[in-house]
Image 1 (cartoon, rainbow over the protein chains, first blue to last red):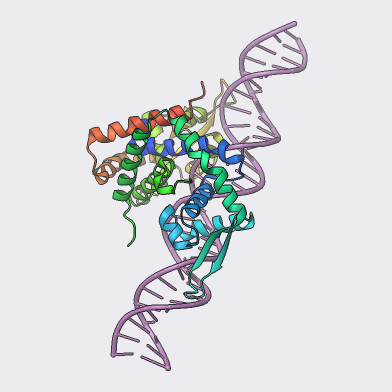
Image 2: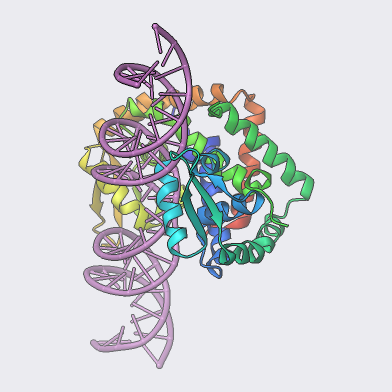
Length: 143
Length: 143
DNA sequence: GGCGATAAAGTCGTGTACGATTTATTTAGT
DNA sequence: ACTAAATAAATCGTACACGACTTTATCGCC
């Protein structure tokens, strides 16, 4: 007996993630950002000058996704990519002034989103923790 | 103050969805299916002969995503796409015998996944309902 | 001090997502 | 009856996501 998609947890998660993208799109469009680009800006705002690998760890993305994404953002003038002198295998990513501006403008976005969910702060925190725990059980971070 | 991605519900949802894809990949690879293709097979197993629009409603995908996806699956011999005679704007999608075989082989996949989550049946059902409610609040179904 | 193993980033090809637009068909209003 | 509006699907362009592979640099160990 095959379950219909609407009965499957995986599909609920999948389609909820797509809906979140859609919900963010109009908020981010005004800034010229896509959702993954917004995550990169947020991660760099929290800690600037991360290497590509560190960013990938934070965002759960491999370099084959991240490198083209970062190149587009570099072309847009939001960040710089500089190879480390100490270890030339690494590339360090830093926000430009325009990138910092964008990060400041984006501060209101998560709140606007949180309100649209109709959930309380503590419900959202619970859901977040459940999802992170599920994610990490499915795919442990490389050590 | 910008939140780090790891503090944001949207990112938890986003990265959990990616982790679910990764968790399904090895199970579906043996069948030659991608995750969205697996959803199509499941939706058709639940109700065969849906139109492209009905499938899109069930899977929350628009025709610009669905049409190429269905064409690839038709080329693989898993389904047929036939224009309706009564209303020639519509295209009806049906599983072939090979598609039904695939659906049968895929029945064990959600269980294998559920076990990997480490959650109970009722915890999974709760999580599913929370996610579907969140999704539908963010993006109501077109009527 | 040289060389195989490891590590970081990048490249390439395939498969979704989705906004914007197009084409073909049906429905509605006068 | 006839055309404007609406509907269903398809097309096109851009941007992820990721498996498989390559390139370049560092590390381990004799």
